[in-house]
Amino acid sequence: MKETLEKFYQALDLQYSQGDLDQIERFLLESAAQMNEDAAERVGEQIAVYNELGSFYRGISRYENSISAFRLAEELAEKEMGEKSTQYATVLNNMAGTYRLMGKYEEAIGLFQKSVQIYRLNGEQQTYAYASVLNNMALVYRETKQLKTAIEYLEEALSIIETMPQCQQEVAVTYNNLTALYHAAGDTEKAKKCVELAIREFEKCADVENVHYAAGLNSFAGFLYADGAYEEALALYQKSAEYTKRFFGENIEYGVTCQNMYWVYEKTGQWKEAIAALQQAKQTFQRLLGEKHERTRAVADDLKRLKEVYCT
Image (cartoon, rainbow, N blue to C red; front, side):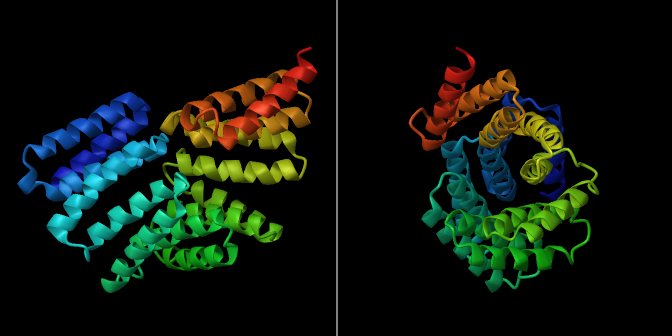
């Protein structure tokens, strides 16, 4: 099984490097179908493929498809490995991540907490998998405005990951998440220090050009914008949008980055570019969230205001 999984992940990495989202989806669906033909002998591989399929759909903001894929992985893990297995905990962690992005925080927290309990039961407190759950729980508590709890979880996760070899990207992601938390808590100095450390760790990685790096660039650009360094901020936002689109297409994060670019363009008086960026954000949110979503409506209102002022 190990050899087969290694070949699968190598092939999947190649698909991602080519950046064709339709082809990535086909590859994952075909891999799942192939393994289903010999299901009894390939359960572990099936779980891995459904996990990757769920993560792929989450990345392109197709959340219902993501949950469906993770549910299939959950059923297999529960049946073949049991509810106390680390494989089962990993599936719950992944599924909870999608629920978080859907705004279903109670469901997400319940799954994260169950995952944490299973890892503790198996003595996995010093593993990357355990730290990953802590990291994800911090994101939920940040989004539910429980900042103190979120910071505690994330600092614990960082203390684990920093002791592990070859985890620069994971350390960078955790620093980037801490940046958002400290910023939300009003500790600007700590936030700025964390984002600088995040970028430094990302740039140590061999595969620096990825969606996590894009998130770090977005955070750093926010501080540059706040400091009035608009040209530098815009360059980072543009780079972040490029990486996000390359790896996951025009997803929610891409729309947010376009919205961020609009703020810079408006601040610097580049009205044509501001309108174009805002139109892109609106199209992205409208396609993924619907016309009535608060984020779509807010962007539409800003776009209407800009056009009334600068296109008359």
